[in-house]
Length: 255
Ligand SMILES: C[S@@+](CC[C@H](N)C(=O)[O-])C[C@H]1O[C@@H](n2cnc3c(N)ncnc32)[C@H](O)[C@@H]1O
Image (tube, rainbow, N blue to C red; front, side, top):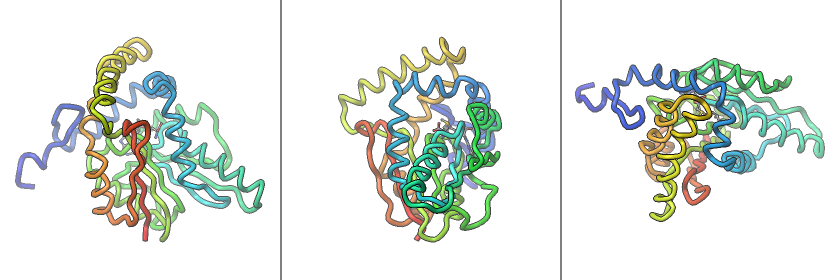
């Protein structure tokens, strides 16, 4: 790589050498793993649950399907996918759905296992940029609030497409850009003041939560990220804003 810019990447508002980002991100989630679920509820006032439920409704889980949830942390999406497929299985019959939660950070997975496991739920340490799965093994691949932590997003998107079966679906839930100035002002005030404060008081860790807020601001706009999905090879790319664009669901298909 010739220019200096391509050798660095964002870590919150800082630019750091690309090779350092993964270990800095790992440090953030090592420190926040124990209080992760509690802090999610505080920071989003519980709204992340509604966004995740809407994501799983759009994933439309079916009996017998296999989900891989990348950067899956404590497993919220995987559990919701299995539960929804199970409801369908009771009506329609068929096999149980299965899900694998994969995450680069073992501490996050261990916090998830502690919350409760299930026979059809598996956990695997893995980097989104080099997933430890065979080609075309999954009916559905999801990633929630994970892609902005990855160093090379397009590489990770290509990996998630690689493991999808043909006609498989991809759903990416991520913080995004509020669609009005008024909402942006309220959101900025909340996130730059309340979230680091809550991080300090609830989790004893202001810096990790300052990083989370900053990393959201460095993440591309809805349209620019949709272009990255296309660059990675996804077809039928779509975007749905949630809560006025505070979060957005990006979808695509392996065609
Ligand atoms: C904000 S948490 C989201 C967890 C979960 N998906 C949720 O929505 O609750 C971000 C997760 O991304 C994981 N992560 C960061 N970089 C990663 C990478 N390169 N590959 C896989 N997981 C990564 C972190 O360890 C962390 O668990």
